[in-house]
Length: 285
Ligand SMILES: Nc1ncnc2c1ncn2[C@@H]1O[C@H](COP(=O)(O)OP(=O)(O)O)[C@@H](O)[C@H]1O
Ligand SMILES: [Mg+2]
Image 1: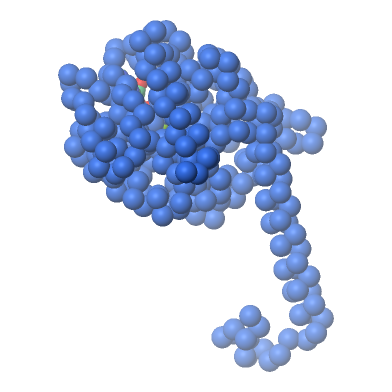
Image 2: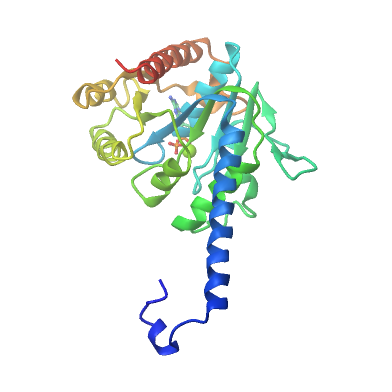
């Protein structure tokens, strides 16, 4: 590395400088190692980490994440939601969180609980909701690492992660920072959404994270239904279930699974199918 283009003008470095550089590199490696270990420790008590993902925004990714998490908690599972959709961290609002995380003496964060679900979100650290932060690759990586290191989830059965949509650096960077057990793809019945979803699934498959399956949201007479299942068949993925478009979602006082038995049963079905897919990927054939 000392033979860089600029190195020539300064001549060879003196040994002290070289030693200092080597020490610096070792320190940095140590820090990285400790960071990785700290993350592994905090996540070690989590059984399944499931990313919820979509090809584009507005298809109901947050709605699916929140209702899936709440349905699982209703049935007795220990559940957390991690909101790392950095441009639209909407989980705080969807879960009606009023209190920020509490900080322990050793500066670790305890996620606030609501409807039986622990919630941690990038949104807690955003100063101004109106002001968009332009996140760049390394910033995303550092912020996620920081969040993962400091959050004390405790033992969980499921951590549901609301990922950023699309094929930009953001979802990739996050999927790399986190070791997911798999992801659930949310799509809508429209043909265009299917194409978007397909493109993103193909890109993300390259990261070698398992696709647990596809959820079709907004199904029904207005947008039609079936494109999600088509997509799943075409790409040889599991179809996890269909969620109908309903007026019930207008009541934003709580996740809709808590007010509509029909919606709860849709999500129970998706939860069961997701668990089947998790079992299939964790026991190789
Ligand atoms: N099945 C559904 N029926 C009716 N409205 C829905 C349904 N799913 C989502 N919505 C509404 O659509 C909007 C966008 O959903 P959201 O989950 O925020 O999308 P995303 O996270 O993909 O951007 C929200 O207002 C949400 O309440
Ligand atoms: Mg969202």
